[in-house]
Length: 113
Length: 114
Image 1 (spheres, rainbow over the protein chains, first blue to last red):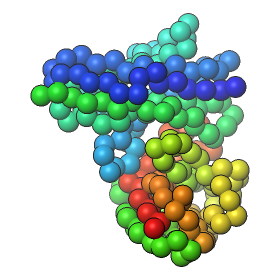
Image 2 (cartoon, rainbow over the protein chains, first blue to last red; image 1 turned 180 degrees about the vertical axis):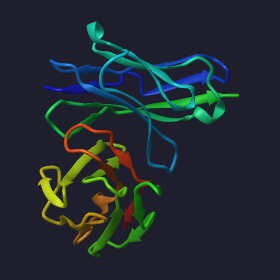
Image 3 (cartoon, rainbow over the protein chains, first blue to last red; image 1 turned 135 degrees about the vertical axis):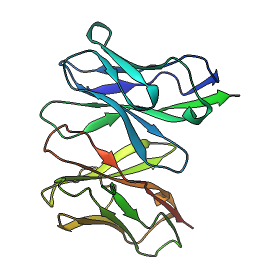
Image 4 (cartoon, chains in turn orange, brown; image 1 turned 90 degrees about the vertical axis):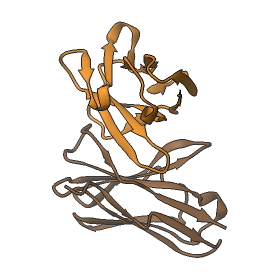
């Protein structure tokens, strides 16, 4: 069955530190991959997406993600976290021929001053 | 572009009352999705429309839930009668193409049923 796993429910980092949020999926072919961010009381904002091509994808707000087919992963990274990055981050996977996304359960990021 | 617009942003109602949530998708988008977000279940897809036609409503939890899309620029999600367990944040999202295209989310409606 298709699935998306975000193994870290909560992550706490200090401002200025680097960040990596993990996302793994289970699917037989290359999926479409997305990272969304949700600030408190807000909707989901698209950070970046991967459909094909270069496996390192740049997004908004200084985020990037790398698709690794061999590991079925699409981890989100940022070299230096800002206090405003505190939010919940969702990985989502879409599959060719369908309209559905499967969302991970989210990782809540806390940033220490 | 104004993005996906949802109204109201917050709704508080009493059990048994009818609730109607509204969504205006991004102009030119022909796919529309209704999601529900709760702490226990995360993000759940309730129903999907393409070109104003409901394609998959298998996620609608009960007959108390219904959704319509009378035209390309408006959709409603109705709960009648509402129950406390319907309390959640309801999101509308739209995308441009059939298939796995980027979905753009509205700000959500936070529903509280007392």
